[in-house]
Image (tube, rainbow, N blue to C red; front, top):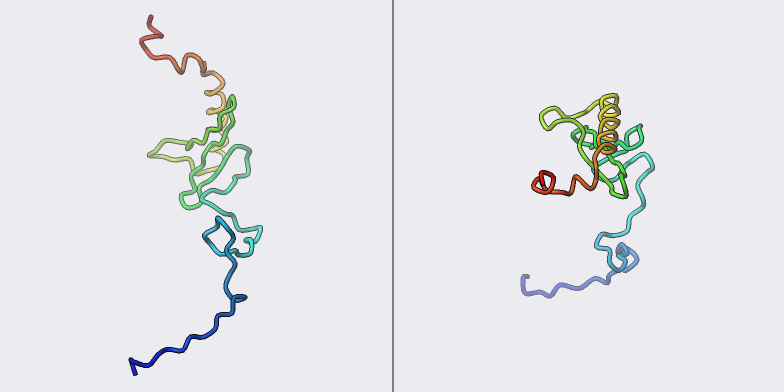
Length: 113
């Protein structure tokens, strides 16, 4: 029987999911509003994001036209509680306000001279 030809069955094109130009994944229905997409979900405070798997908080700030996304806390002890994240976010904002943009781009040699 291996020499027998297999009969091709007609394909119903309506059963194949539609793929639009420039999109590699088939179109699906949008997720429910309770589900969040991506690796982060927004925290309850403005300017805070929390990583889904690790629970670590990140500061998401606009400062002088630049968007800053920076992890809060040290590498060995990351920030995982909301009150601590709010305090560290406030500290980060005041630190950015105190930084002189012109001086931050100068080299040490230029500052000494």
